[in-house]
Image 1 (cartoon, rainbow, N blue to C red):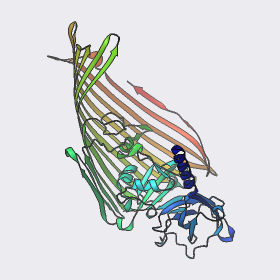
Image 2: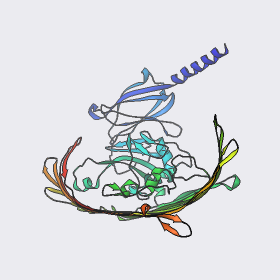
Image 3: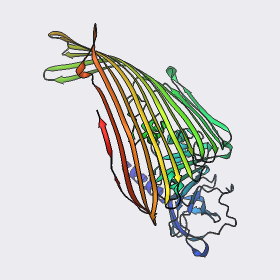
Image 4: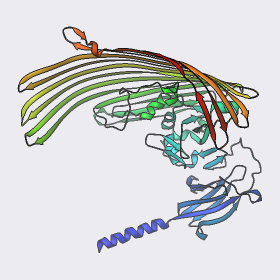
Length: 589
């Protein structure tokens, strides 16, 4: 009987919960009964005018906002060029939520460049831009911009900080229309406080080539622009967080920002000894300027290794102390003519003492293995990115970007393994390892775009170069002692590896009109790839001996010229490209 009562109460509670939500629907029209497509519908809490629910009209002006908790709201309908519509609304609404036709009045004065402060519209849609009013979304006092983005309808942020807007991946996050830390999207969203943001704008950014030539090439980058509050545009602001706990554990970070019409300045820092690296794999790419800054000639010039302070979600063992510090500065002499440089380095130290014991059972008896490990690792990483973008000229655009990354990693490890059979010692394995590595990666790219006249719409000249230099030095000592019969096997060797890889490429192309929305694009590129690899391996004893068969030296060079031509047809909905390339190359080993 008791179970029945509990079940009935739960079922009744579910029915009541479902009954406490309602839908509303209607149609929005303007002058001459024309339907207003893509008008924003918002239900606001009367207490503070923050957003409770939202909707958007379809191309026929119809809307439906579903599953809104019953209660009192302020209904707000906004559409560009029209007076904002307000209505006190109580749910559930009569007629099953059908509100009928809602007519909006044209605005008496239409000044799109002026912000009317009395308006409090959570969402505006202006052609291809969705604009969110940050004040309409509740966040905690210490929330970051990433926390704010999670509140915005149509915007998704996963656990790693990757952003989707309107179902598409966001590739750029700008602050006041400018890159922040060389365009590293997560540095902005994870560190800028939500309290500093006035508006969040989401739009599709066209390519530089399309902006200059006026020819739509179909390329779009989903972009978020963070508009700061007026009092943050000229002020120095930031935040400091410090924590201290038992056993001398601590964590802290401090951020300082300064924005002005011509200057952008930021300092980021963090340190802790609670086994928190603070960086995801994608963060690491972003800190180095993203994939774009690592690309050279269409291939990624950066090789990944184990010397990165990256949190892949794995268990972190040992005692880890880590820190990071960054500096970002940009100067815009005049509109669309800007220089920027950023540095975001990190370091960590790991100390691990680990003992483990395993036991296996079989018909032949019990087999035990005891392992002891002592490991120390230090890592330092120093990435720098810089660039100059000058788009102030209506005829010529210049873009230069570059950067380099220096990584130093040092590991020492000592281990002891003992194996037993029914408490009888079978063998002992002792190992010692030292691993030291240095790596320097660099990249550079530059482009010149020239707007043509007549049939020649655009001429482009670009250059890309990258280099990678790495050195790794290993020493390892193993001794295996067997007790029945007694024998000892020693291995004491070293291995040194040096690798250099260089890429350089020069490209040129022209865009020629040959009919309505029809274009020819002849072009040519040429470049070189040079690689050197050397490994020396040998035995360490009274004398250091080189093992020739394990010590190769390899050199490769490849030079190429690649002429080509493509035919393009672009419309608002489709893009067709037919092209052909020929590569003439020479390789030597």
